[in-house]
Picture (tube, rainbow, N blue to C red):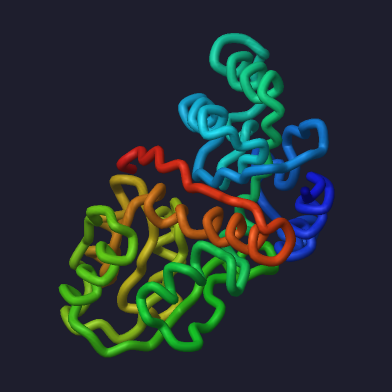
Length: 252
């Protein structure tokens, strides 16, 4: 039976957790410990109460998520915050969270996994942020409609798009999650199509005016990949344990 600290150390090493910049609320790494033993791993996008309830019901003792316990900032240990912590601690459930380190990793990351699902070959790093590349870019030659269909097939979820750019797509940029607010900077990179999870309302009209296709493939839907990849790597390379994905879509 693997020890929790072995799994945590390996994940921190694989993902370069300490070296990758992030938002203050991410608090990447182990967020809640247990007694040190791990027998079953659950993966999910958000460390919300329904997910923790399902992890406990599945008898998992390690939950890996993309958006952790502190995503909305520090809060009093009351209401749902109290319920989440008490439920996890009463059932020996450890929680490990990884945000941008699990977006940008070259093989385990949300970007890389989605790019593989889209059959991209050797995509290049894309869009500098605090000294790292937040996404990937790829030269292609396919219709906008075909790309849209491939994205919905890859994520298994409906997407929305702004057809502000050319019908025949040549240069694509990809940043999973909520990068739609960066449309002005993205247009300056020379891409004609941008794939992300979601964006503010104004990003649609801005993309039209900039001549940029934007495909909003869903914040949740584009960020299911990384936690699955990490859980699978843990089980294959270290633990030999069973893992499961807890699907709790937001539709956003």
